Amino acid sequence: MKCYQKYWAVFIISLALLSTNPFASADVLELFPVASRTAEDCCPTNGKWEENSSVYLGSVSNSGYSEIRTNIEFNISSLPKRIDSATLTINIGYAGQRWLALHSFEGEGDASLSLFNVENLLASVSLSDSSENRSVVFDVTGEVRELLGRRVHNAGFSFREDPPNDQGYTIMHVSLDNITVAPKLTINTTSNFADGALVVTDEFCSIADGSVFEDPYTRPNFVTIEDGRKVVTESKNGVVVKICNFDGVTNSTGRAVLYDFQSILDFYDFEYPCLTEHGSLATKDWRVVISPTGRAILTCRFSN
Image (cartoon, rainbow, N blue to C red; front, side, top):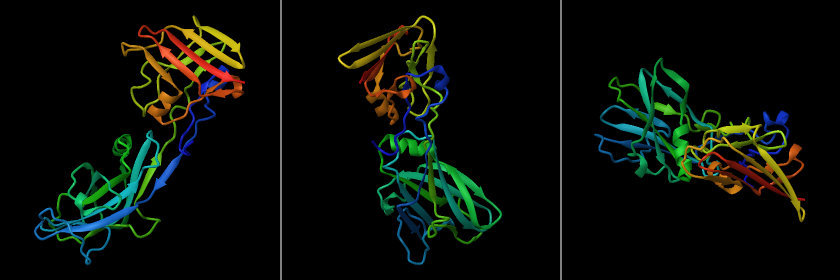
């Protein structure tokens, strides 16, 4: 089992335990650049980027006649597909009133010069009141999610001055050489599934409705049925089967919806076992079927 996988249980527990998922956990991961490069396009600018020994790593500037950009990359290959948020924090020194633009790109692991012309603007911030070391935080959740969804290994970010400054200000500088102020990609994988669960007991049953496969980043909509459900317990050859049948489950897909341990793992990148009351038994052998008309069956099989 991968270390980043969490557990969103298919509970067979008492109602008193439903509000707290004992398997839910939170992780805040901090990633630092695996590659960085500063290059100059001069003079005048023509889209041809070169490294210049006279330009310090981390420099950012644009006079309109010459431009300096800094690109960095983070290895995101070990992250789960599902994240709650991603922020990029940098520390930058500058003089005067400036504009810092953040672009993103699919990295190659070496901050290649060939990627300096990639245009994909994520954000632009105004920098005022000259500072030797100002912290700037960018929300890059959407971009990191998109890259993770395509199984891209490296997330690249490019720092640029845009629009150019015509005041002759000194070059801006993104700190890269000190771990305490180096660019940092903070990933929050806190599960917002903690207050939901699939349940089958003699008192009630609860499952995710037909929208379960709409969005891997959003908590499924759970429906709990206390009346009109039927719970069957079977035991044969050392296997205990819990089955809950009930009606009234929302399913707007117009077709039957089926999901089980593996399909949920593939979609959410989380492992969801089915538990007996108080967690005395656990199994990956469970299945939910929701008909187009909202009739549902939850089945969990346990081996003693």
